[in-house]
Image (cartoon, rainbow, N blue to C red; front, side, top):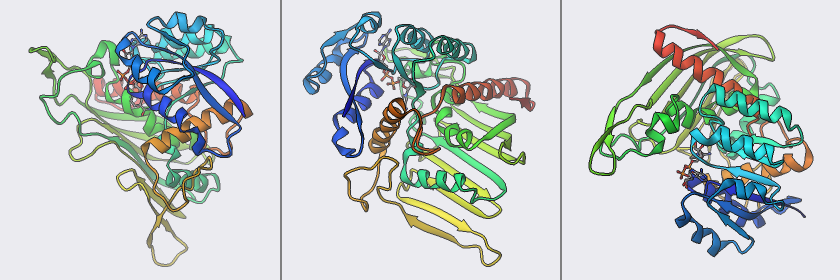
Length: 380
Ligand SMILES: NC(=O)c1ccc[n+]([C@@H]2O[C@H](COP(=O)([O-])OP(=O)(O)OC[C@H]3O[C@@H](n4cnc5c(N)ncnc54)[C@H](O)[C@@H]3O)[C@@H](O)[C@H]2O)c1
């Protein structure tokens, strides 16, 4: 079993998810490579005891990411820091000669993303990917295999989205994810957009133009210190894209939604593909359920399949048992380590987001901002 020594920069919500996935590696009996967390960094040392108490492999805990990057033992780094730090910390990680799993949006804006990709070009030996876990749900892997096999026929329409309701409460205090200077001008697009684009981009469905409608539904929020502060990030975005199927050159409408204020929704990621031969739809609201319609000229019948643990990377969990969010994180990390070790993913949709795919997402989100400003359709 090959061991890759990891450092984590940013020990908050997502840093802990990675650490927990690393601790659960015994779930993946066929992996020939595993992560070992040897170093952690966060400016907030109150986060350290949870890591220290659960991971005896951690030998370095620091508040300065430069110290972690100087550690020769660290081979790969997971950076899960606020968006305004992506450019600085990701580039420093690459310059230190480490492999990088970055978080979305992989740069606070298009310039930052371009700087990260330019830095990557100078360090071609580094393996670099961006985190996005929802395509690892077994039902989505099955949709991926249908796309690879060309089962949909000519694409009629694609609908994809990621919906939250946590900001429906106008009394919810502001945090960095609602501040333009830290989260970025993209707002909900930067937070949720890459998740929505991962499968369409991997399928080769490329947006050529976009008409975006963005809304800031709660422009002021409690600041958590007894006052009220402006909340300037976009809450909700709907993008109508003219997309082209790069396999065939055919175009079709692709409607992408990222919403923080979607009543009734909690982390709902969905994908619907309507094709001339087959159609499929999936939502994490019903995480076992895959719906498929195959059209052969007869009745058009939506069938329902309960998908169990039919995962890209074999798991010890019984095939009939249900799959959940933390399983998708574990599968995503298996994909990162597998590709780092073997040079390619086991199949087209069992790979993490590439830096080039993040660059395309930045083109789309930047065009979406322009579309909102001008009220027109904008080229991507
Ligand atoms: N893949 C997903 O599903 C998913 C979900 C949520 C967030 N994210 C992304 O993960 C990243 C982090 O988000 P989060 O939810 O974990 O945020 P978080 O606020 O919970 O954690 C970020 C951590 O970074 C630390 N930090 C800030 N400045 C630092 C510095 N200079 N050096 C070291 N640490 C520093 C903070 O103290 C905090 O603990 C963001 O890019 C976000 O978009 C991804």
